[in-house]
Image (spheres, rainbow, N blue to C red):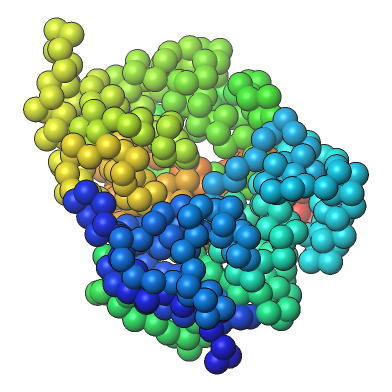
Length: 507
């Protein structure tokens, strides 16, 4: 592939206190799957936003098909043949698939004609989708298909994908890859951002590596190992998490027939969940997105009240207590959604530290906030968890997604909870940051904390968990020792408790 579809030359973009992109140059050919790699805060998101017309570079130039290219907005980028599937879906739950697709088109055809086109394209690319279904009833993988088909209907020259497999099952990942390979064969270029390096090796032709906003190298992912790519990203040796498992202690957290309706119209109710978690134990809970993970976090954090005895901490009924009361007793939680749920977007890191840490860090005295203490707490989080930010007075939304994740997880860990519940601890973070977060979780467990890790990343769960349970349609399977579990057994557990019972009977 010698022809160039998109060429970037010397792109630079600076924000107050940070240079997001510094003299970035790269080329993408038609029919090429080009990976963009880098640590959180390396400048990947800023670069693709410039290509898609969401950000205007300070200097440098872009050329598309040999012609100058400077989209004023995403509409101009789409008109030129560039489409993007974002990490966070932009869909309306209460509307149908066809209605959501229409909202993303400049001049949509009549709904009946559009539905027929959706069916044709979904069949052509192996992405089965019913245009009449309500989006709120779709799985995470099906929602992503809506986003992809919305792009494919525009016949793109370049498709940008940001962390496309973070919410998919292994089977859905393979379906996606088959679709992308078909697009590649038809000449569509794909710019692919992911922290899952084995996926990069399986799919991509070329990889450009960014570090601190600059291009530091490129490679053929098929010819190097995932570890080598990770070390190119971090500029050093990659730390491998290690766990020194000690004896498990007393039961700290008990869920006793926990049942609750979802507070969301299209959510998943919790159904008769019973489990115990001991001091020093990491319980890993796996499951495909949309099976009750958010609801379970809410019930444990105190954001969703349940019957008192359904949740017990050291035997004390706490199901009715709100979050701050649970924090005071020793239960801390970190939800999946970083911006807006785990952190207030327009508040500084110091203010966010005070919001969560006021109880356990004693940051409010006689009704007054100890801002000096809150600032010290925020600074400690930044230093201990290598959060890339100019300082604690920066607002939360100014951080990259991965750096905000490090901040949120660090904020909870440094409060030394007796029980920590975390949903998707390393979602969207680079290999180095993921290793650091997993190590911190294992270190916390080694100190006697009971940890519940809810994650869709099965590799992550199996790496750090002592016991594994699967969440399916709001029901939790009986925990099993994580060591020695096979992928086939995990797959059966993810399919539901009845399948697991059948497997045991057959064994």
